[in-house]
Image (cartoon, rainbow, N blue to C red; front, side):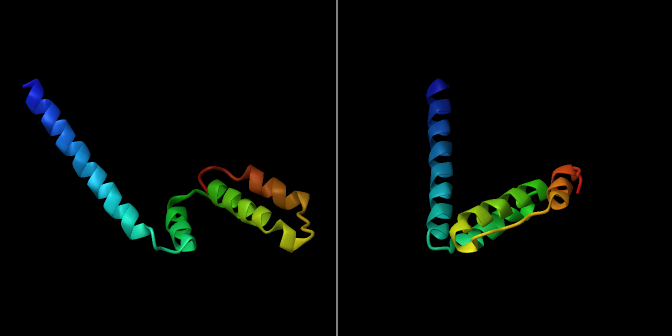
Length: 83
């Protein structure tokens, strides 16, 4: 029984590894921006705001100066999780 259980577990792990490898191979050539858009579809507003700030920070050398009002920051921080 133990031998059969071990063989089944190994077969299941091999099957999952194959499925993951197939997905990774399919996504290997995809544009990173498309993948990012697909993953952001289920994010809540707080995660999307954090992602936006990350992208702003990545382009900081091209932006130069960015002013954000305290009112905007307060609104972003006070949003309820339901929004």
